[in-house]
Amino acid sequence: MPEAVDATVRLRGLTFHYRDWGGEGPPLLLLHGLASTSHIWDLTAPLLAERFRVLALDQRGHGESDKPDDGYDFDSFTADVHAFIAALGLQRPALVGHSWGGSVALHYAAAHPAVPRALVLVDGGFLEMASLPGNTWERVERELAPPDFTGMTVESLLAFAPRTELGAIWGPEVERAVLACFHIGEDGSVRPRLSRERHMRILRAIWELKASELYPRIACPVLMVAAQPSEPRGRAADFLAAKRLGLATAERLLRRSRTLWLADTIHDIPLQRPRELAEAIVAFLEAEAP
Image (cartoon, rainbow, N blue to C red):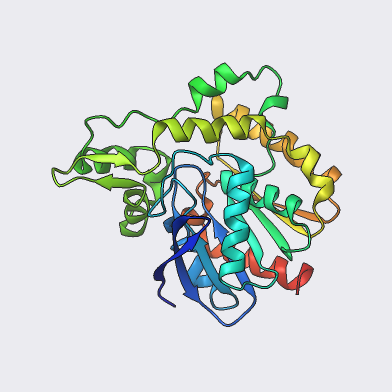
């Protein structure tokens, strides 16, 4: 399978890092989720590169891209993506966004409906947090704030991470994807590449996003891939119910859409089910956006 080449590009006064798997087919741009990096695609992208020209961008504040003090809103992220597409000369790329990256892809397609030939929203981009019954910003702020990594080392992080839902798929590739989210000091300490303050600003932007107002502006076909965890309880069950509600709204308002549920699947679909995800993307694009 093709190896990724790491590169940088200067956009809008900032330096952005991206990974390029090459490929001779139509362009496909991958967007990671909140507090993640382009490495979330390391298992899925090589499979897609057999059919497409595949690139994955570290969005501002994330990974190895620059981390300015401002611009953590959807208009800014959309402008970054637009500048990246122009700088690399990508002609009508398909956009694939995971989690919050799905919301960025959706916002981009609403702002520039003639550019993307298709969208793939991977367990994200189809939720409207503020519309969920009983949900408040205070609850979201409390429940979805990032963990406090103060005092944590690489050793303690690697002892903790396999105890999360990633434990069932833990291995060298997943470990690399997790470590890519952190700056590692000479003393072995870890610090998230996305600061807590910027994380919360993006979370607030997600809270305020009204996806239902964007759906009618989407001109291209959309594939929505949803993770269905096994035996969800508590917050996981609430989140699953919210996804079902969000998908029903999206299916009603989008002009052309398909929905794919993946059973017994965690949120990080690109790491757990890379082949199934890649096959679904290829099948969808070949059928709906050849």
